[in-house]
Length: 276
Ligand SMILES: [Zn+2]
Image 1 (cartoon, helix red, strand yellow):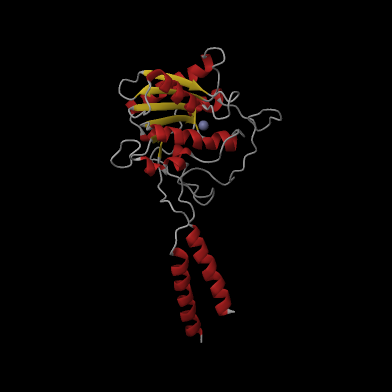
Image 2: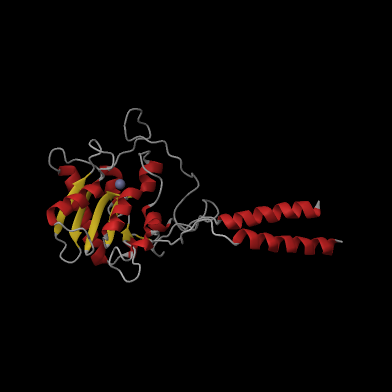
């Protein structure tokens, strides 16, 4: 009898697996775009990016009157490192006038270009989904940021859309032709450059503010300790990837497959029914 039940259970499990995993839960392929950190760069490249990030920080700290916005951006030529233009957040005029958008529009006005391959974009804060999409459409070679969305939103209680830029960047394979590529080459994202300065001297912490328009109430997972990690306590010997000198470029942990979840649940229910 038990053998028969086991066989029945196996049959139901296989049927469930076939039914459930037969369909994708999204029409699009899911690709992962890595984030490179200082420990992934050569000393020469790190010095280049730190030098340019310092220029953006100085632009914020010492910019002309009215140009002071902690979200500031700079576009440079990838070969000559010539500064092409700056931009800064002007959310007072329009909520979509973010630093990166402003820099791209300023550079477009100055040069008339509509494609930005061969250039790098530096931004004090990680790009929001809107700006990351603009960076992808514009075809930048690299985007380099200081403070992460994770830090700004989860730790500094600052208004943000809770989505890492590399998640958006991973879905850019539909832009191959638009970006004059023969095969998909995602914008390279380099994170955390001079974040020791941007985290503390550029951006502020709004967690205790009752009046700031930048205040947000974080809706974050308290047990998250870093990318390429599991929950704190279960893998505590592995430090967060961003700070791990020996780890490869960080990728977001694969999202839990909804099909797998359904299969597990249905199988579990089937087991209860059969063995009851
Ligand atoms: Zn933005």
